Picture 1 (cartoon, helix red, strand yellow):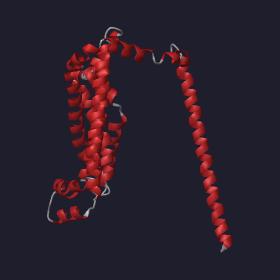
Picture 2: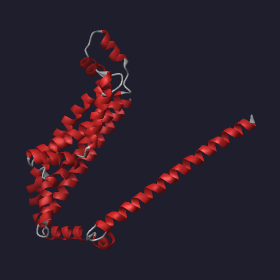
Picture 3: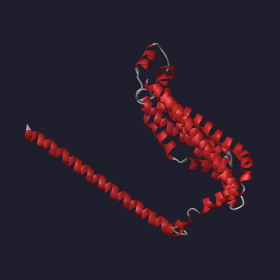
Picture 4: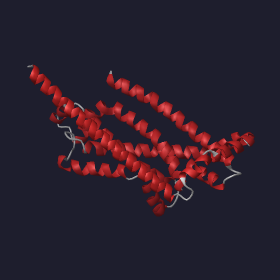
Length: 283
């Protein structure tokens, strides 16, 4: 018995040492790739990273100093750019709603045991993979080329990415749903839509809403970033104020304050409601 125990312990330690070896080699390769990539990027950089490192705080210092000098104009600037902030929030809200609804449908069609067409599950999963694999900014740039600048390209781009991301998470949640209500509804003659609406959605709704609120918070940041490529909103105004340089840094500071305050507000709000939803789901 002791020999068997010793053999098991020896095999276990051998596996542990092998795993540590593989982990160490993987970490070493990762470090080498990062170092090589950094050196290549630094060599191609016009100024060089290390040469310009000591100036990293120059731009924030210029913005803050000019904003402080013109601090009396700050309330007026906050009011001036508030409509652009509302536009950014609207882009995030509409794209989150469209993306969540699309992701909901695609997730149910891609979930084993729930899909209406089981043979098409791989197809719907690949669709979700493609939708979340393409960055929003790439989609937005293509749509801006086709549709022109404005909030519509940003909304469509964020909605597509949101549908792919939420569809993946929704599908994972739906796989753990209890199928007894679905079987009961099926025995009464309910169609697939009724089975999903009455048998599955009530079970997974708290988690779905929690993920949607989290995605809304992320989409506010994404819609602000897309403004830099001409997709409207407060990001577009921020790009213009930064492009002019000194003389309009006070406007950039006002936009930063609005954007930062909005992100913090919705972060706290969504975290509060997400905690309530998850706590209610586990009770």
